[in-house]
Image (cartoon, rainbow, N blue to C red; front, side, top):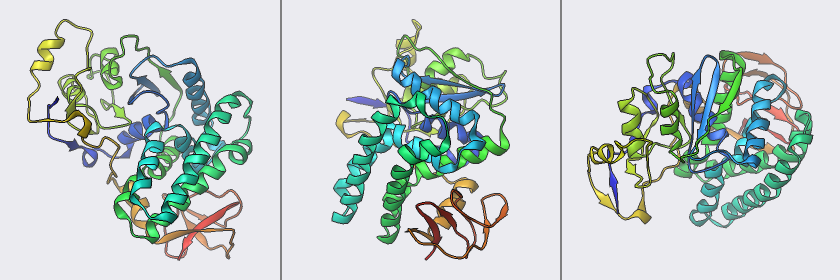
Length: 348
């Protein structure tokens, strides 16, 4: 049995994307352990996992960091592709969803899962040899992004709104990150914090930044909703975050003799079977940036291998004219679309 310290609470509505890009970044960098967490300080991002990063996963983080610091050379789809390859939660979501769709949906999800297994290991093996966006796109991100977009098209066409909501998350996060890191934020470094005591990632960040009063942004980004103990720990330290699923992990710990007293102070609301815990995968958010993607996506479908005359195309924050190979934007406007080498998002 386990405790619930608080009712399930998702705080998406309380923060705009200038805060919640930290959650998106945590999800992109979710290469190890159940949860990872981020915080911003003096144009640097500090990152923690539930344990000290392994050597192999450190290579993955360094690779993603290099792309983030040179993001103007890359596209939204490169970020999306890396998210789909490295995020541990999303591949598990794809596997579980196979039990809730028809045969054609199963085939699409099976293709995605197979592509994932065929892509991730070679990418990690060759990670130091990838020197340009075209190489990354051709050999690694292109196919898995196309497979993912085919799943979205299937969910749209079959009006599977619940599954569409969860599957939109990588798309929303990648566009949020690309837009924010290329236009609104000067990013200088990413620092991975040691965690030799295997403290929960978000709590480990608080142990490092013990006071929030010196920070411009007292917001901790997380790849999933915080556990009940972390929620309480962050709140008492003066930190904001995206919410809690309420479950108090009995393995949660702090490097202090006050641990037992702290745990006993958590208000017990109910008990439940450990094998039937609340869903922890991030729910669809509702800030204006993501709502635009969500609402407008319903008017667009993905066509493979077809072209159409180019119109003025309306990106999320500006108007751009013309289109061609490699143009990667989700577009707003009834007659707008974006063409790429594999197809385009266009009006049905």
